[in-house]
Length: 192
Image (cartoon, rainbow, N blue to C red; front, side, top):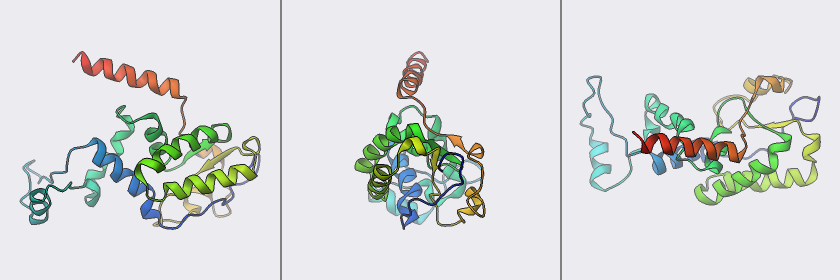
């Protein structure tokens, strides 16, 4: 979004599956134990496909079960995530924006995540970097993402990309602020 203008489609990268879902499953596997589906009684379900994966030593993802994705979503309050992972993870949520002055920080985070988890993040990094080389961050109020192919961008940005940037939330926080939150979380965990 240019200052005092409407949203503008700047970059389009095909294969949304390699975006938000790819990052969520990467973080899930890195920070959460293998999924064990349970019934209404709280007991593990006797599912053949789960047994087969477990017998092979494969990770069972929560991604297949919509109600269990909340555990992945809850990683947004898990300070085991690195600063870079957290900032890019936060950018995958609805109505997240990166303010123009934070774009260089976001690009640094995106580069780290792109190198670690792959998916479409290397392409996103390359295309956003190229876009920023041509457009000054001083002329950009914010950038935002539509990291799914199952909706219409107008759901977020308006029919004519005229939705107010005020409807979006700033997903970037200063690194030192996040590092202090992580330290506090570690201290609290160690004193339990």
